[in-house]
Image 1 (cartoon, rainbow, N blue to C red):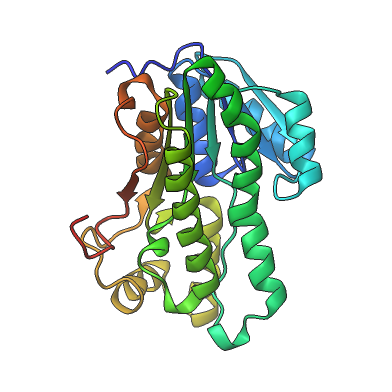
Image 2 (image 1 turned 90 degrees about the vertical axis):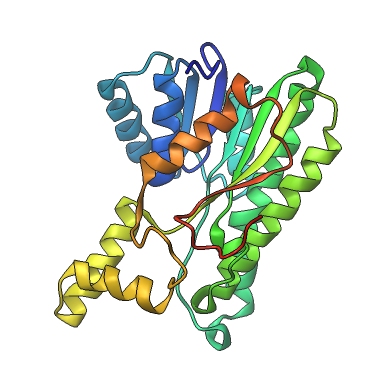
Amino acid sequence: MDLGLAGKTALVTGSTAGIGYAIAATLAREGAHVTLTGRGQAGVDAAVARLREEGAAGTVAGVAADCASAEGAARVFQVLPEVDILVNNLGIYERKAFFDIPDDDWTRFFEVNVLSGVRFARHYAKAMARRGWGRVVFVSSESGLNIPREMIHYGTSKTAQLAVSRGLAMELAGTGVTVNALLPGPTHTENTDRLRAERARSAGVPVEQVEKEFFERLRPSSITRRFAHAQEVANLAAWLCGEVSSATTGAALRVDGGVVNQIM
């Protein structure tokens, strides 16, 4: 299927690794001109080089900036004033018991996971509407619906993303711009794999046991009973970014392995 991405300009925030990189790489393979972002220049350069080596039909560029800050966002806007596609992927997470989460952590999670996407959508979506075409995707999480006991602050920020996504879709009604949320579940990324390896070493058990216990204790509702691969998430993201998804807006689409135990 031709997604209709050839020649489109796309920005994916927080995209030097993990799900963000997989989305950027998929868009580039489909012919979009993709810009990646990351906090450090070395990491951005490495990701751009890797993507080019893997093969991209569209051009690839990168901007080093802290996209969680207003200053970092302004830096990206200066380099890339307009885009056709915005993927707000930047996000952070951590396991922490509710009674151990201080105010500063709540503020930090809101700044990174919610307000960063608000800034980028506020800047880019107006021009999309003027041109009559655009795609905005917020990478949320199944945790936005299925609030995790072990990281309530993270889940709350992801719920807020869903509200922003739906509200912005209604704000842009009839403009040709679609706004949707993507809800990954437990996913293999460089960072999550590293954390599980550390837990396995600390407990003196195989990584496979850590993964098995994760689904038994923390995500027992999972239907696939496995971690998704970042590419599986990126496949749905790319579809949402394409011409082919023009009738889908204001939606929250799950690629969570069935973790959320509800029909809608």
